[in-house]
Image 1 (tube, helix red, strand yellow):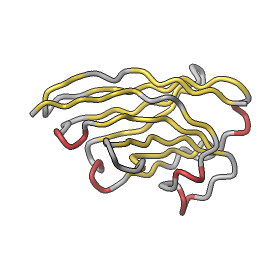
Image 2: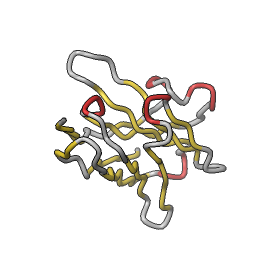
Image 3: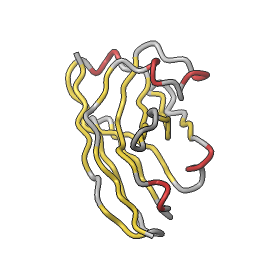
Image 4: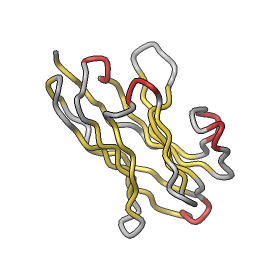
Length: 126
């Protein structure tokens, strides 16, 4: 089993920055990819970014390219999402996810991920 715990969610003003963290524990050796997703009220969960553990390749959804950065610290077993130039439209519940046997063409699909955290809330005031 793999456990994920997100932290770092907060209320910030538009234009500000925030860093989300995802602590990973358990049988971490089976994880091939880590992702960040977000969910707006009444909407389906959508991909934000992903990183593949084998070669650290990263992927981003178009709305966050150039503003967000995903990274990982193997020593701390933590994955980060650095969010800069935040917009009101970035406000959502953010979830961390981990997957086994990941395909790079499917990084944005929630169904590819096997483990999920409980989420951390990001609020951006305009």
